[in-house]
Length: 288
Ligand code: HH2
Image (cartoon, rainbow, N blue to C red; front, side, top):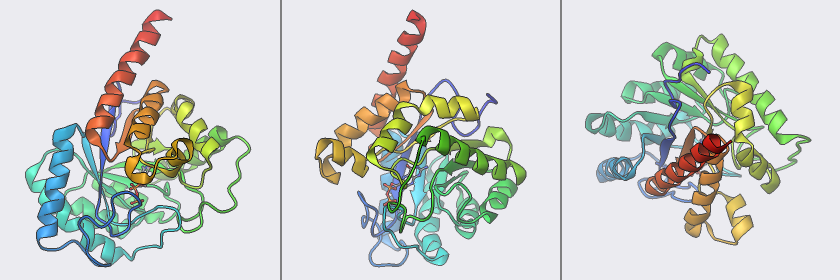
């Protein structure tokens, strides 16, 4: 595997979620009032929240201005930009930690990279806006390619997989090929099987438990984002605000199975889960 500049080998990268939306499924409305941008005191409050995530154990901050929860409506690019750019600028002045922009749109990625982001996280894997590849290539940015069939608005309808791990791997390989064709070197790419994106409980479980197979097939680092998602509620009965314990369990298993990076809301808990799971995976390798 080529050495990665996105999620380096030999450690687990903690990618902390900083949602700047009115409607994200677990943490929406903290810094955005109404349907517009992040303004005034809310910019500072959001930047402080990001710095707290870094202090708690995050390696990367993933800043997003559009919810991609099931059923979410698309946000216009100018609104997304008005949410993320002021906060990225404020963070870039205060931290050297890599900032990541969670967007499917090329204009948003471009504005965010100018504002200080170094990574782009596209949950659609270049399917929504293929121009995003050129933006990332020009800027020399890292790019996370997610797996998503269709659109967040309708992704939970008509779900069908015969072999979810094989199909997600093949579709991620198509995204990787698009990124490579745009000139992005392998060292700047990572993939994500898209936990909760157009998948049922059994699909999410298979993708987390068998993440090592995706990693081995694509020879790229893999990020997973199970944090607080509804499949955890299906398993435990917990409402969204009480899913952090279930999230830790899912994160630990994913790391044991080979995940290189975790996208989490609770950075401290994610970092601890990663440390324990890495130690256990090391013990398994030494004793085999
Ligand atoms: N999940 C969400 C958003 N972005 N990016 C990657 N790479 N992987 C994920 O699993 C992923 C993601 C959804 O979670 P969240 O940001 O908490 O919610 P919302 O989309 O409602 O803002």
